[in-house]
Length: 390
Image (cartoon, one colour):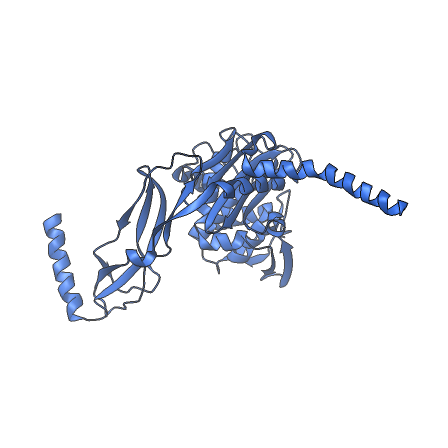
């Protein structure tokens, strides 16, 4: 009996000891986590609009480390085909740091090389991709910096495709969030960064190696679906993390944690906080925005076109939520041939009269080239209308 009393007392003390730890976790969910956040700079945004939910020193210049590879990845997705063949150069094989263990003369498909780079954070793979696209690293870096400016990451400057330390290679938490949000709109990018592990195949030598994703949140946080880790001695722990709950996708960026493991804790606290703050307001069902357009020289005289997704409005509690509006950008006619899923226009989403998102509008059905008397009539009518409105 005395033993059980002692055991009960011990358990009670343990519970009393652990409660403050749990209370601190709850505190981080319901109030801004700035006092418990170990990262030197951080930001939390709603992914579709880029609206800021929380920030801490978000414009401070930091080393982005391997988060740089988000830019390398999106450029490769936009500028290459998955089956493009990449020959590994001596320059790529000799790169230091985290590695896919490429050797000079290795041959890989672009898709395998790209996924391997993002999973294991291969610095060598990033250089190989840069070589394949632009012929050399400096030319590719010029594309990276140009794209950063287009995205609005105006306080970012790259000097390499992998994030190895260099005084002139820098960014900010705000800029990294903008880059991450831009990349996240690409469905192939989303698939890559949400992959926990993958068998990567080499064409030559003929081998397959399975790699795990360095983003531990994919295993430990059930809502996580991306994006990219980073770490160097100079940069500290870095992470761009995404997660989705009830249709709301948030992106958290943390830069320069002293301990590499702290980046995951910090990002999770930010995401938990954000999901308590953000909800979706019903906007437009995509079927309500369906339009009919003429097809010139098509077997079918018209096709229906529809946004790829419903358009809902994120509402952030505690903020002055201004008006959302949309603008349809759909042509009166398109030229055959048209395939199902071809992009024919956009729906622009505006918040407080500022464009915050662009949703593709695609063809619901095909129209191959062919003769149709209605199509011919529409062709004549549309050209006359163009003359009158020119």
